[in-house]
Image 1 (cartoon, rainbow, N blue to C red):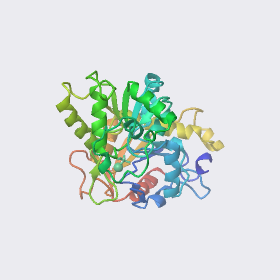
Image 2 (image 1 turned 180 degrees about the vertical axis):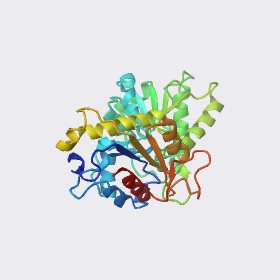
Image 3 (image 1 turned 135 degrees about the horizontal axis):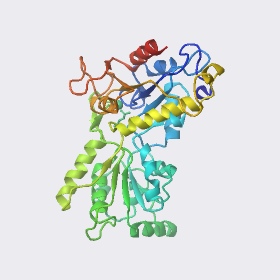
Image 4 (image 1 turned 90 degrees about the vertical axis):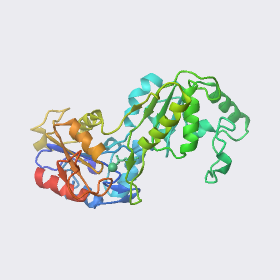
Amino acid sequence: SAISRSFSSHLCSLPSSGIAFDIDGVVLRSEVPIGGSPQALRRLYDDSGALKVPYIFLTNGGGFRESKRALELSELLGVNISPSQVVQGHSPFKQLVGRFENELVVAVGKGEPAAVMSEYGFKNVVSIDDYASCFDNIDPLLPYKKWTTKQVAYQSSSAKKMDIRDEICSQRVQAVFIVSDSVDWSRDIQVLCDILRTGGLPGREVGHQPPLYFAHDDLTYQAAFPSERFGMGAFRIALESVFSRIYPHALKYTSYGKPNPLVFKNAETLLEQLVSSLPRSSHLADHTNAGSHHLKRLYMIGDNPSVDICGARKAGHPWFSILTRTGVFKGKENHPKFPADLVVDTVEEAVDYILRKEC
Ligand code: G3P
Ligand code: MG
């Protein structure tokens, strides 16, 4: 694969910079490549397939394991992307494994949220679909939801399934993780309020709110529709508003994802590790220490001023922010509140600029 080869020693004699690509609104809209993203990525490799500038994807989106997302991105974009090049909003959840490894936790969102959490090491995780199916009549609107075609896990009456269902119902939920965008806000707000107000035992008395974690707090994001769509931040506001009317205390929660500077610090470490992990030509070996490779400039290419650009600005040196016009931001001039270091039309233009500057 391209990534397992060495860095090109022809054009950029020594990689001194790295790139973090936002996904939605920069390289893809829904599942369609935009802004010349396949060509832009191809230009990061030389004719022999060696990488000229190390890069990762830094998205707040998610719902699938990093390995699966890497495969999907490789197919859509036509370059070989490894799982270590994919950082999603929920990737930092793996740091919480020590605290909840064997506890019952509920994972919410589109895609395969429970599979994501299992991959991170959580041993007792249930998706909200499966969890809701353990409780008869928990969603009074279910009969009207004609789009639910799939029989959910524990609704059948086989003895084994009934046992699993009883076991899940009787265990206290110790934490809730919003891994990706909620598919059914009405059901999820209902079930989450049930879990959160009862201390993790829906249908029982009021109890202490279990911890709640969001992968990110994006109010909107750019999908296939011309104007932005509601993101996880909008869902958080809806949940919080309802919760505050039925529970005496404010909703307690933690949000991960951009614009948190820790996300950018982690991206910096990953880009440095990416350089260090690659087999290098003797030319490069002369110049670098094994195990660590300091990068002088890091580019964040994003479409959302209050998330991607704000985050890169807060992270400070060595980040340089580039704002594209293919997503949330559609303005002519720079953004007034979160001005980027550079504004371009597309990701291809951004990569052109970087290659001119660095190679
Ligand atoms: O749900 C995904 C969206 O909120 C952001 O994705 O790639 O623009 O960070 P991205
Ligand atoms: Mg985006």
